[in-house]
Image 1 (cartoon, helix red, strand yellow):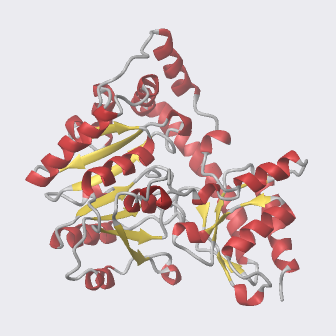
Image 2 (cartoon, one colour):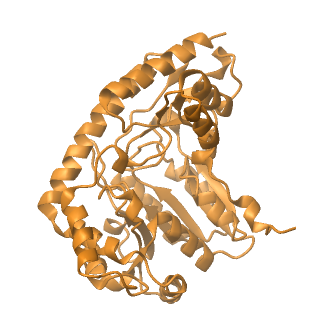
Image 3 (cartoon, rainbow, N blue to C red):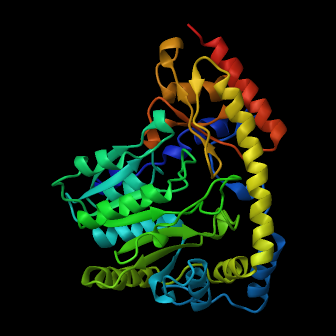
Amino acid sequence: MILSERSTHVNGAINELDALADKLERSGKQLIKMNIGDPSKYFPTPDYIINAYIDALKKHKTYYSSPNGLYELRKQVAKKYNDIISADDVFITQGISEALMILNSAMINPRDNALIISPYFPPYIPFLKSNGGIPIIFEQDENNGWSIDTDMLRRYIHNMRLKYMLFATPSNPTGTILSKKVIAELADIANDNDLMIISDEIYDELTYKGKKFTSISSVASGIPYIVLNGASKTLDSTGFRIGYIIANGDNEDMRALKSKIYDYCSLRLSANTPAQYAAYEGMRNAKEHKAAVDFMNSAIQARVKIMADAINRLDVMSVVMPSGAFYLLPKIDFSKLDIKDDYEFSRSLLLEKGVQTVAGSGFGAPGHIRIVVLHEPDVVAQAADKISKFCFEHVK
């Protein structure tokens, strides 16, 4: 057998319908793809970031950087977090995906448990499982706006040995932003149960008007924590593959973990050096950055509203209005449809209406689909109309 046992845990839930979509496109069918969260396809990466990349290339900055990343960029990340952390706490990675691979490789032994707050970004699970870890799932309450019942969580993990707790805010796939109170309570739970808390904050600046984001770094004073973030979403540069790990804390375990993260970074030599210079400029140039993010937030919020309003007018679907990012995770009432589950729904919607979404099961949310809302408003409205017609045609 050529394949390793660990490889059985690796899959791509977000791309599961890509082969079918490609076949349909080759046959001449027009598709509206709403499955991949790639803002750079719809909001071009700002010129000042592109120019910084070009400048790095022209100055031949095409060498290996330090394994943990350019000092200038790590220092700028620390500044973003109000210097609560230091540049030595920051490790530049090739996106959050590599960060997840490094952390699980460094922390997880076979049969180690890790708590995952659901719904979740699909790669959380295979990176854990491929290292022999066991995901312990705790579900958010959809009926209460995808909230986390921290009292229930505390009881749920009582006497349970866990290596880490992982959550995202704003969330992919729900768009939920956790309140400062909830994040502080999660930090207390992690501290009381001696487990590492990991906060995925890749969408931290993609928040809607009136919605406030809180980083774990601002409430976890005195306890070790890890932040995952990067350039892909808020710097609108997904293809640059620049992410980072912040590992904050000075106890023996955290010092050992930082050392091992550095070793794993050394193993892959370096993240993309010119892209690091571009990310540095993207974060350093506060005026240009704010203008770009403000524009994206305003445009995305309007597009999300178009789709959410259309879904909530349906008798067979409903969705919690998100507070950030660019996703919707509508719930489907299959008792009213001649479709059995979210896999069949997303596949049939693609075949019949040419709208590509993703089954919610891959995000720990069976009975839902995830919709990426980044297209121009008229395309979003067109997709919403197609989804509505599809539902009407499949009512029992």
